[in-house]
Length: 348
Image (cartoon, rainbow, N blue to C red; front, side, top):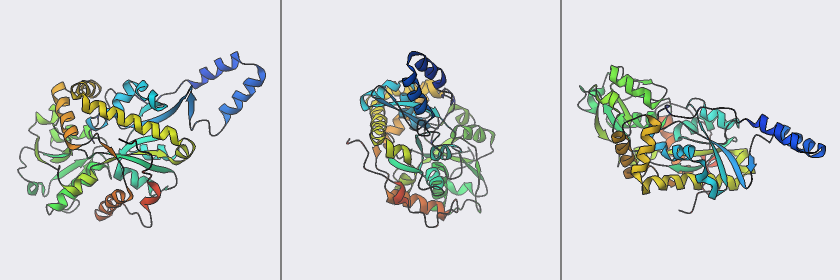
């Protein structure tokens, strides 16, 4: 998944304490006692209602081409008002995201399917997949002296994190071409997709998957696109992201979850309807050239990256098989059908 932490909103306090004090000052004693009881309730952090809108804390990995719907929502939360929700958008790291969702620190999250399933297998009762997006239009970018996938033998490739979308996908791509990560090819984890550019530019890695076109910092050092993964059915399924929610929040607020999905879908449709405007949003948020942003948006639209659809138990099973095949994770008796809900997606 293409991401950049630049221009992203950090996690921060909502300022609810001062709001609470103002409310208490304006209420009578009985009402103040009632407000205090609500504020101190263990469930009060799970959802807040402002007028007829339900606040939903929704996290994403940062400003990137695949996550422009979330960037649009962060820039203009009112886009979600017709769907009854007020998104509280938060940028979060891939390493901490699944745990934060399971703990209820956030209520919804967009993340790669593999990363979610690895975390979910440890606490399957805590979270639920409610939708899928994609596939992402990942391409293999390589150093200037690499002329074929075979040339990656005895070299190093990169991925954002273990179990991430591009980690599983690059392992599968190499496997399809007779190479095994850990035996024929080394792999290193950069922490984020954007960090891969510097590693490629410095020569620390000789290959990585990314949505084209590659940013200037890597291209200026001879890094180029060797091939696209589009049309590879196995990789297309692995290159999807999921929208997941905390199970308790879903049980308590099913209409809010439906509204959130409808809002993400509406933001995605805005991108398809006006890609030039979406590119401006991406260029500003990710601090990249407008030309690069235009190319990335076009690639995402062509691949269907902004199309929302069900992420089924069968989809999850294929990702799990890949993760186990490459010994990234073990799932034992984990049943993905228990963490998938396909009934909440918008009609179109």
